[in-house]
Image (cartoon, rainbow, N blue to C red; front, side):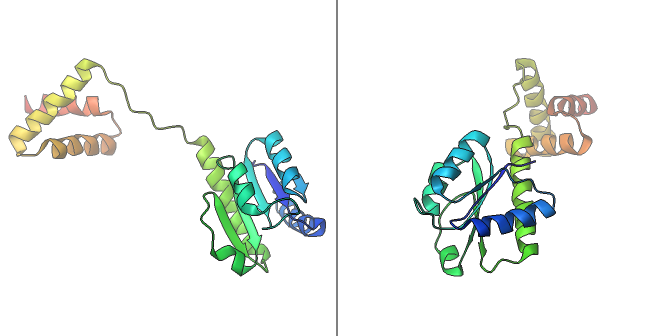
Length: 181
């Protein structure tokens, strides 16, 4: 589950949103009324979702966004005027008054984004041996010669066949070479 922090200058607003989220299965890690409390809670939790208003006694939401950049997705609940002019990453805005189903759908979408990002490993280029590179190059050369393809088209052909068959490019290159030679 995603860590959720709810932050509004008025504690009763934060409690109302907390009640809605808890009733629908979302655990709330912290309730805050100041930006400093948000930063302290965020430091303890590490990452998650912040549901907040736009102004606090000690800071405004763009400052929070800057401090929490990359760690927290931020759901800003504010008047329509405050939702228009924003150029901040990881920020979704809900205009007041908020409907319960809109809040829940937005939190669900943002939680999915967070969990998907957490699960998705960094894409690292595949390191092939010299022999494997030569095998793929040989298959490309054969396709270029026999089918009059460019190098990019031959590469794309091997890549597509590899994905379609659920095999690696090296194995696909071997199949191509064995069929034509």
